[in-house]
Length: 402
Image (tube, rainbow, N blue to C red; front, side, top):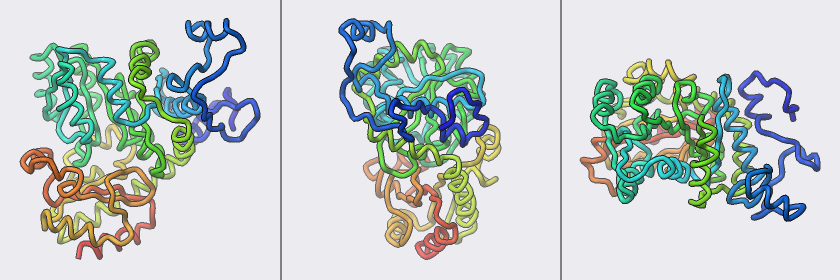
């Protein structure tokens, strides 16, 4: 492993070597510290650690060396090329990271401003859970900057602007830089879910945001082997006080084995994302001309309304897309049943191609008029385009579309 004082100038070099500290026994890879608690050389040392006078581990709910390496690596990737540090806190899941963010920052009487077409868990948290704490929400079309400005002006109780770009599953994008600048005029903090893009494709901190979160379960891990999440912030003092206190008290800690798998997965992130994106572009172009497909949502197509915005704030369009079948609900079910190589499941970010049919799966219980409002039509298919050979991916889609 590279020495800590060696200047890493390449993104993959940081992905491989960033965050690593050589352990005392000289293991090539950092061990899995499967321990619930840590011991002290003396009672006085324990006192110093609990008082915060001495750095060191106390209890794995509060921190663990295996967590620390994953945190440091993601910090390095999200801040790569920037002139300020960020602080990351590893969580048990992406939803745990979002919950920490919300409850550490919002109180009764506050409001969160966000947009349509969020990840289902996030939407349910905002719609159904936060109101029980007296925290209200405003959901609007944030692609309209003038509308966003008017909402912020009229609602001084807005304390957080929460963005997911690209959004799930319609791949709509919003202008991070413009919305962040606007929000800061009204002393509103800004958080971005960067799960779909990863820090390789998009660095929201570059555009001035205050918080970034990931479901590390997805592209960062890359292999579908572990659940996890991370919350990162640029206000180091706040992250080390109010945010980490909320995290500890919620019991939202990761576990050593999942953190270890995450660390190993991230080392290949750049080469995986390059292949995901290259394949996704070809799949989108194929679907865009297919007679059975009514519409393709992929920001790499110049027909997508956010095509130019994506070029501004993302390195590449990403590995996710969705498309609408002309044959509607039953057509979506039939298509899913015909897949031979691609995987029928609801997750994303793994090396194999994953497809889901929201209307009959994840959004089956949502009223049709509601999901249609979010762009989730009867025939919509969401696809995580994997790293398989493109010829095989397209061959499977071709036979399933017949």
